[in-house]
Length: 376
Image (cartoon, rainbow, N blue to C red; front, top):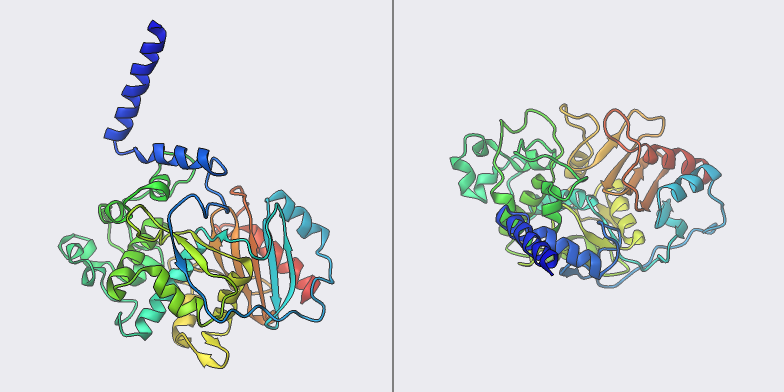
């Protein structure tokens, strides 16, 4: 009995210490993961967290190509998809659905976690906000929305563009491999605004590239403030309804109803593909320009600080088949190949992907090369 009491007291002391040192979110993480699904972040996290619905209207499915699902993927692709735990693969060619395949009990109506592909969608919302006159341009100061940044040595220079190009220079180490990292806290914390607005800047923004998810969360807070609406409502108005998405999506929130702007839009692979198609068409949809063509080009224009990165989108202009893509944790991709008029969506569950010298996952290049051979 004495050992039991000692264990209880030690456990209680450790628990109290965790709370006092700001890591109380770990209990929330353990509780959510033990209750529902995998013990780590997953493409199937849609039910683990509260969320806002991203409504659609007048749903319109993709028109199927005459050769829909008649071609077999190469062994190279199939082996790689199996190795990396793929859950879906959708291929659009010439604005028609030519191939789709699902694994591990996923289907065309499964809502899959975007992870950081949401950052690229957030940048699209910035373009809509500029078109709506809510932002002057991507060079608008963050302090125009949050005046407290005007009193900071470096914060007074911080712009919306810096947040989209990952040049915010925050005191933030992007780390996914241990539970005490800021990213782990960000995924489970109950008050994202408090966490985000208390992260300082370590140097002048705009000088160098450093991928930091806090940039996206701050960008989301700015959009919420200037629109006066939830991000999910704005996303519904600007993308889900105009693109006649097949299914309403869900955007995970913290306990206060603030969207996880850095991640976690849960949608179908088919609907993710429509976002890629819109960008590949330079913002035009059904004969109507719904997003500025100029801004669409800016989204995929690399910066001098990182020639593989634009406005939260990744770029590979020098490959034999040029392409650009949305990229999310665990291997979520929306890949656009303008020369082939092709969009590829792949979702999965593997965080050990090989990357090139610019941190681009090699799997994207493989999918581009092999799928273009099969369908191009």
